[in-house]
Image: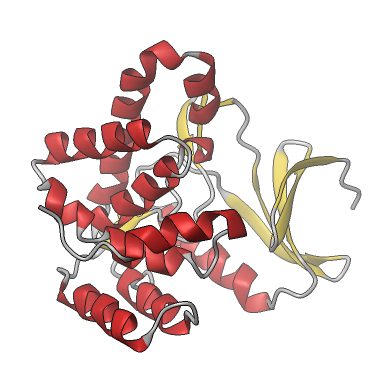
Amino acid sequence: MEFKELISSSDTVDVYKCGDKAVKLFKKDRPKTNALYEALTHARIEYTDLLIPVIHEVSVIDGRWAITMDLIEGKTLAEQMREDPDNIDKYIDEMVELGLKIHKEKMPKLSKLKDKLARQINSLDCIDDVKRYELLTRLESMPKHTKLCHCNFIPSNIIINEKGTYIVDWAAARQGNASADVAMTYLRFALQNEAVAEKYLDTFCKKTNTSKKYVQEWMPIVAAARLTEARPEEKDFLMKWIDVVAYE
């Protein structure tokens, strides 16, 4: 199979356009469990009412594990926000509404977000044992939910076309607390634009009648977890969030 058009690339996968399909090729050093786990997670989410790509095949191509799914074309929400900054409030509102649709889904068969966060925090070598204990204690005290969490819910993973609004890239999805998912999105926004991050958080809290402080209690936890996969230029920013112990 020949792939001519690279859609995106990361440390773990390359995604190619192949006709009306997208093929996610895992790097050769990635174990088969990565592809199979992601495919299973994605397949379970296909049974919800959310618009997402449908997986058609899991295979091995040129020695690399691959997932073949529908190619979703259109304009990303990130592109809309860049092209029309005067309507940022509208786009944030639409994004929060979409996030609420995700969180309405109960997914007790997915892996638990709290377990993943704990593993990530335990693996960190850039924090001391006291800070690790504080973070893990806070994590354990947080309410346990089985809501669907995307865990990478950012504007570039939202694609709008004539059929509707699609959500892509479910590799990190878990069952868990919606406010943890919101905290993850907040931090991703804040890395680029703190004002937009605050709009997103304020809109979510208003629509759900959630205390802003409650979402903020997740910030040090998810910031620490993200350190395990963050780019070097994000480290100082995330370390500052880990040092925030309480909010007024």
